[in-house]
Image 1 (tube, rainbow, N blue to C red):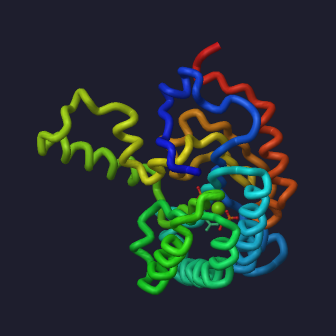
Image 2 (image 1 turned 180 degrees about the vertical axis):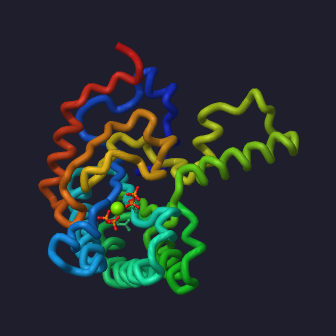
Length: 251
Ligand code: IPE
Ligand code: IPE
Ligand code: MG
């Protein structure tokens, strides 16, 4: 289940964080679709199409590995700066993915959660996303978190704004604000702490993804382009993680 409260860095330092074995929560920056297509002389959309297949495979593999939460970065708040035609292609793929896979995901016991301001999408896409969330709400085998129109700085800003409003209203004292207060207002509230953050295609940056939540996540960057990331790739990343020693600033 994923209902236990997120642990803060302080709790992790006190020795309650997972320090070995399997990660409970994996997040992936699925990057490299465009380059995958370009290398084959194909349009970028072909890479995105193949990328969706990779995402489906990885969801299945994560389930088989007993990963509690898989968070996938599918569309960033900065991706609006791409050509309108690419954004429209991505939205079509999202529509098709939900229509095609929702029932199977629901049957597999997966709960779907979305982080990011997906309300900014076309109304029919918003409706499909809401349907996916509602259809899988009572599932508890694993959680698939999809980051859609997500940006971490905006998420943290919104959290701070809500806390500031509580302080202004007198329902919270400024010196009672802790890291847990901030975490409770993030869209990842209630999820286990992020253990492993994977980025494909070799880029070594976070691109505004889970900045707060990555504080003590183990980072894993692979040159593999997202459409080529398969079952074995995820198993390799998890196996690499299990060799890491997490110290949280201690010895
Ligand atoms: C990641 O692949 C998918 C999204 C950002 C939606 P890209 O589209 O960023 O692929 P590259 O980085 O151009 O190869
Ligand atoms: C990050 O990839 C966003 C997603 C994977 C959805 P980008 O391709 O948008 O990141 P940058 O532009 O290389 O930083
Ligand atoms: Mg990219």
